[in-house]
Amino acid sequence: MISDKSTNTPGQITFGRLRDVSPCEIISHMSDPSIARHLPLLREPWNEEVLAQFIAVKEACWRRDGLGHWAIFRNGTYVGWGGFQKEVDEWDFGLVLTREAFGLGARIARQALAFARSDSRIPFVTFLLPPSRQHIGGLARLGAQHVGNITYDGATFLKFRLETS
Image (cartoon, rainbow, N blue to C red):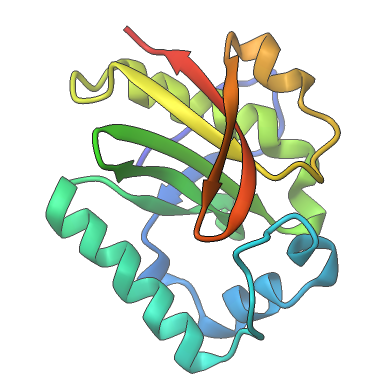
């Protein structure tokens, strides 16, 4: 686990495994319409079967690559999931927070990117954002550059890249 021991920001952020979060919490999170509108690949309602498949895919990434998506906690409370997933030869960073945790995105991203900068496997990170995301200035503040648009599994995304080395 990684934790933020900073005293100038409230609450400790820690990363764990999705398999250790109550299924009800993740299903509730992923069933929130305010979350779904920015997830073009979310095409079916979440239930225990969909969640089990999702976690199996994420755990396979951990076994294959030694890294994957984390469950994210603030003061021990689940606030979302995200992290790094290897897509061919690129490490993509994703972050899906609960509605109550929307304001923590930049802080969590900075903490995760500090991890990436310390990991020699990750020379750069990509970010794929749906065009529905209108507030993307935070990526520029992190130093990410827009490199174009891509289609992934039938959906269009804005692609950004951030050098970590």
